Image 1 (cartoon, rainbow, N blue to C red):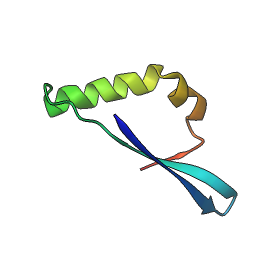
Image 2: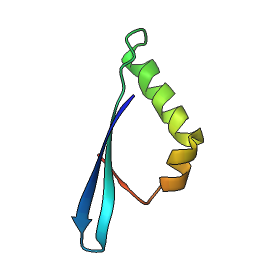
Image 3: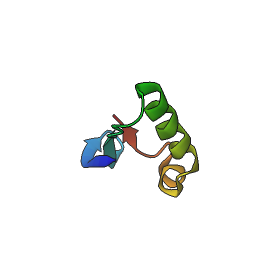
Image 4: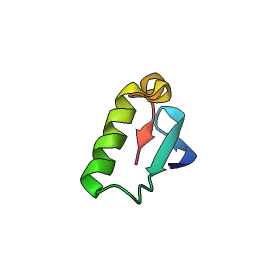
Length: 56
């Protein structure tokens, strides 16, 4: 996984925007999407920031 994190200015002040890029050469697209979605549900960073940052 590669993450591109940006600081953005919105109507409520400054915040974060994150773009995630995965490279799973040995998985089908469906398997890679499922793995990424499952990881997002259990990742402590995802849990801590859920609803607090803009995901692109």
